[in-house]
Image (cartoon, rainbow over all chains, first blue to last red; front, side, top):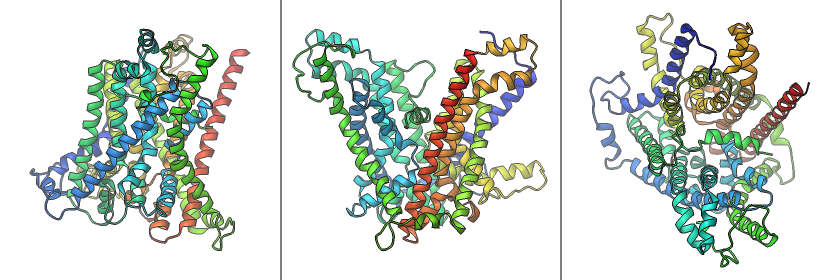
Length: 289
Length: 307
């Protein structure tokens, strides 16, 4: 392939611009991680001396953070289970069957990605408030699942499409029952997709703010809501440490997905991460009507 | 696991084939599909469609029970109208900025070798999965009066530094753009990667200058992606809450913050519901526009090849 040769000046401009843009994306994250280890909170950057003090404060007696962290972890685990169940069934129906009204079902599944979250949060509040389920981890997880399941469905659909159906047919022709085919053929091949879907559901829920804000009560507050409340009312340098922990959770999760895909050899050369929600949004808009 | 779910008649180990197999088999595949689609459809009807529907009903409910449009006329008056217009303005500014920045980065990445392009895309995608709340907080640290940015600008003796970068529109647009940027980069990169670079070389061989090539060849090829990314970004900004709420001042209140305030502080449920439905209608309008532009674009291109 021969394209238009680029001029030296053009290349330099492009490199400088893209470096600046990448800094624009990375800088807010780097500054939090660095500041969280700095002794002088917000005073100067880079910090003059280092400390682990802000992390120790988090787990000191009387701190509100451990409760928020464990609530978030519980909610995210529940969300993962719910959206995996929904994701596996929905992806099977959409990829491996003759589903009547297929595109309508697909549109419904992806719709939560483009609907303003305020509307969803408001509606869920109206649903759970009469049932006096506000502040219950199950209610929050049920709400998060609406946002997490489209991502799980997209990842699992791509996974199922990537599995050669003839392998299942071959096993069946050798006398394997449906259950055996699923357990011995489909499940092992779909494993990386299942792990990815689970991890993305987990971080979607772990980082979600608006629905948690509407569905939480005074004493049950998830980690992001707690961070938001602190940021809004008083500045507490230990928030920096919490934020750094949130960053670490996301990075570890993404690394896990990449590792599983690499180990199983299913990762294509250019895609380190499976179907990003951002890409899925286009698909959502195409099938929205 | 759904694939493990027992399905009637599963005893017969019949090799499954694609659609055109026997009628009884296709019928079983249909039942299998319905069985597996049921959980997600029921779930979303109860926890997604029904809540939105009840929001709609609430927004139409008068104080004495009957139907009314009172809450909608309220939403289009005085301070509320101003907030609505602010939301549209900030969303437009943010999507425009994300488009321009995203265009430059995507264009640069689409010229890189696969290995480098992969690395850059990791730098774009990883922040996307880090909580927007955390990234907003990062910007608050960076943009403060004695933050890194202002210190650097003062250090360089830029006249006017330190600037007020927080709690005004500049701050909101910077913060929201950094949240939206991964979307535009991903969408534009997908389009740009598919462009045959030989077209540009061909235009150059016919004597076209660089500006002409960009304007007459490259831009029309990227245009569908730009429209797509721009409208989606705009839609996502409309209902966005976190960054404007944390980085904006009084004048940057967006609809989502207004809804939050009406619910949490004023117990004004009907008004909040009406505002939510207005946001929803804007979203639908955006999606419809996207669809219309898409089919219009396809029709235009088909006409071009026919003549």
